[in-house]
Length: 228
Image 1: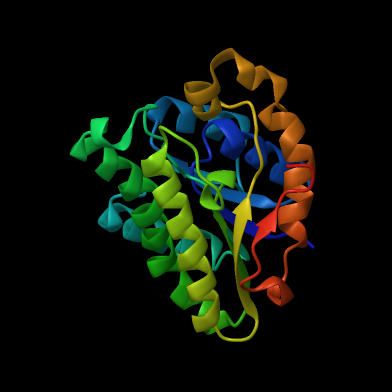
Image 2 (image 1 turned 120 degrees about the vertical axis):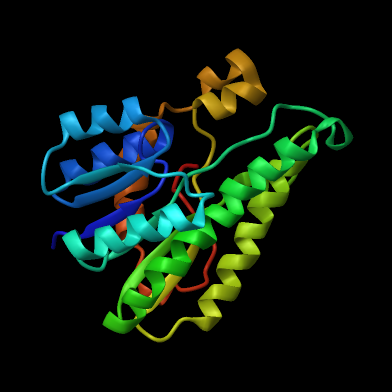
């Protein structure tokens, strides 16, 4: 059955690969990103019924306007995938500026909450839906020089499991570790060694069907993309 999937960070990396994967499987993608050029490229490649908008998830007012528009044009999404994220430039925590730390938390944590604040009431009213909040291996372990990113993804793990306890029957919230993928974000940490990991497209061939397999019975259960 075809679903409507609300996807943040749809314009690049994992989000771009998931967009292609969901569309190929016959689903409708309602996505957002911050780049005007990349959003326009998605609009050109995928016409109606798909929808792509320029949205900064860290801006609650903009998210609210976007979600209200989506509800009007596409109805309540069946699945919400909070993928948008930033990582800090590799550095010891005390070398990370207050502005950079805030930017990571604003997108990774506040951005996730902003989307849920506006979309969950409609999903609860309908009585069904699955929320997938992207965590990370660094949401369940730690490494040097990525403390802000680790903090944000550990927050997603706790936030999602607590949210799961608030949700009524018929809905689910799942924190998802995507695994290690050769993205620009990984290259900022691993450099050229990132090429030894799967490309976003190869990863999506496993990740998209796995995300689509998550159902209300998975509520609150931390998940990892197979092979990740």
